[in-house]
Length: 586
Image (cartoon, rainbow, N blue to C red; front, side):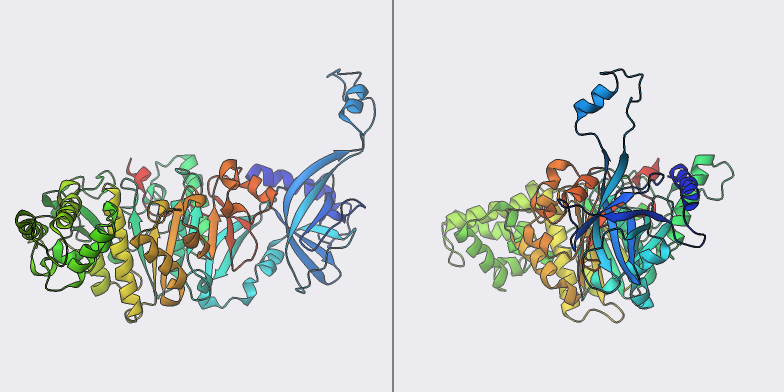
C-alpha cells in the first residue's frame, strides 16, 4: 500500500503541472452520452490518463459552491476500436511482437455512486464538471464529523484513499447502542481475522469513549477470548530489543492506526474484566475449557486468577425457565402443557425439590403408580422425565448438575446472577461456551439475555445505561426458518432493546442464515470477504452489483459497512485488536 501511494503521489506531481498552482488536483471530468446519462444516484466520469485510483475511493464533484460526494464503483477501459477483430487485424493478425500498427484512442471511465451533497439537493451532476479525489476535509464534510457532539462521537474505523490519505470515520454512538438506532451484525468468511477482530475493536472504542456501557462477550471458539485483559504479542514485546524489523513495522502501524482515531492501543482493563468458564461433568471444581490461552494451563478453577469463575446450573437456577431448558427436546403440545404446569405452579415438584435427581424421582412415583399429576397422564410424565434426564444428566457436559443443589467453592458463580447483582458500567464479562453442547450454548445465551433484560427493564444500575452483548456464530441461536422460545427472546431484544439499552452485536459467516427479523432489526451491518454465492441472497439485495463484486475482493482488516447513520455503504479499515487472542498463545 505504501509503494502504491508513493507511485500515486509521483503521478499526481506530473499531472499537477497541467493545472495552476494552488488549485486542487482534478482527476477527471463528468461524462454523459445520448445513450448513457447521469442520474441523481449514479454518474460517470473520464479519468485523467496519468491518474490511478481504486474502486471504492471517495471523490468529490465541484459545481461552483456546490459539492457532490461519491464513491467509485467500477472502472472500465475503452478504445475507439469497433471490434476485437479490428484490433487483432491491426497487429498483423496476431503478431504478439507488435504493439499495433494503428494508434488508438484509449481512456478510462469510472462509474460512481452519489453519497451526498453539500446543499442536500439531489440533482444529477452536470456534464464536464471537475472530479477530485476526496481529501481529508472533503471526507470529514461527507461524514458530517463537525456536526457530532464530542460526548457521542465514536470511531468505527478509518478510510484510506489510493494516495495514502487516512481519515478516521466517526458516528453518533446513539445510532449503534440506542436509542436512535441499535444493534450490529457482521458477516463474512471465517478465520480471516475480520468479524471478531472488528467487534473487539468496536467494543474497545465504546469502552474508551463512553462511561455508561458494560459488555458481555461469548467465547465460542477454542480459548480465543479468554485473556483479552492481556496485550497481544506485538504490544507485549514492544520494549524488546530482539524484535525483528517486520514486527517493529507491524507494531508501529498498529499504534498509528489506533491513535489516528483518538484511541489507545491497549487490552481490556484487568480490574474490570471477568471470565465465566463451564464446569466439567461430575467435577464442579474443574473447568471444561480449552486451556491453551488460559493464564494457567490447569483445569482446576482455584489455580486460575481470581477474576475467573466456574458456572454450573442446579434445579433452583432454572425455575421459571423450564420451557427454555427443555425446548431442545421438541415437546409436543401436551408435553409442553405439563412442562408449563411444573414451571408455573410453585407447589409443584420443580419448586419443592432440591435437585434434578429429586425431581425425577418424584415424577417416577407417578409413572410407577400410573397416576396423574398436574392433570398429566403417566405417559406424558414419563416423556418429560426423560427430557429432564437427557438435558441435565445423560447429555450434559457439566453445565447442569443433576445431583447437587449447592457448591462449597466461592469460585462458583452463574453469569446471569452476577449480571443481576453486580454488573457495572465499564465492566466486561467473557462467558466461555466453546466446548459445551449446542443446546447448552443456547441455554446459557438465553439465560444471560433474559438476565440483562430483567436488569435493564428494572432501570439498570446507577451509571449503567447500556449493555452490549456480543456472540459469534449467531446462526446457532437465531437461525432462519426456525422458531423457538430463544428466537422469540432474541427478536424481542432486537425490536425494543435500543430503547432499553440492551444491544446485540452478532457475527456469522452467512447473513442469509440468520432469522430475517433479527437481521432486519439491526440498524448497522458490516461485511467482510464474502463469496459470490452468498452475495446473491436476500441480505445483499440492497447493494448495487459493483459493491457485491467488491465484497469478494476485500482484504484482511477491511469491511464494507452499511450503517443507518451514514445512509450508504462505505469501505473502511480497522486496526488489529490490541488484546491477546489464541494465536498469541504460541
